[in-house]
Length: 370
Image 1: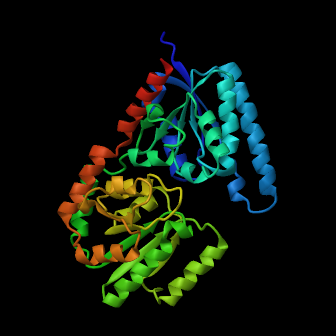
Image 2 (image 1 turned 90 degrees about the horizontal axis):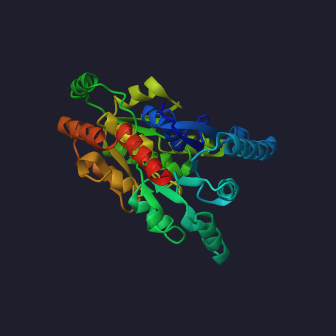
């Protein structure tokens, strides 16, 4: 009987659903990893993000001690050979997470940390912070989503301790299903746009409305759906006021959050995913990969590793100037074609399937454990 090496996942998991939680869940349930390792996990995130009153602070404190006790229990009784830790890059969350990391070090555990967001560099304004970050990550291996993100951590983590592991997703579309979508799309006579992300101001939904205003003034027939959860009532009111200001109520529609088959149905009927994100912690958005799965080009900004993903013109466009007018010009100057759709789908199959990165993560774990 083969005894599997023990690995402890210390990660955020759904709910709530976001890119990092989804990736952690996919890796946690990976057959490739489960066949190689005996995996236990601790969920880092509490439900405090769902609460907006003073009770939230109690939940945060309770969650911290709950994770702390669970971590000690797992380190003592499960005795993992490796701890895979999705660590926050900045703010109070980082200093909380650093306590968990110190405890792992006290138990002489090998640790692989992964960043699913950027923000380390913005935190290093004072010398003592640089020293603290360096001490936290000393003798710790770190996974980044792209080489272009190394500049965010270069002051505190040497390249020799870095691994690169892009995001990947499962293919939820058959070849037959894709061919059927392509045949339907040829008959479409209206431009269909989609914004698919949380309704946070820095994620760019207001810039999408500005693009729609330009398209309307140009006389182009189009429809744009907005899908996602609201970040706040304040921004919700601002967004709807902007919608009315541009007189776009007959072209633009907020549909709420969509998941699973409902989300896939929207992606299957769209010409462009428009995602002009300026979100400060943006790294490697899964929504871009989801669009590629359906052969949909993506219009976005040069934020995080987005330029690495949209690295060919037929995949869409990432504005280096982070200017919505650049995205508008791309739309009116580029005609959506069937061959483009097929090429995008092929790029997804070649570069963004989850199984490729499950194998990579397995090999990272093995290289650190030995």
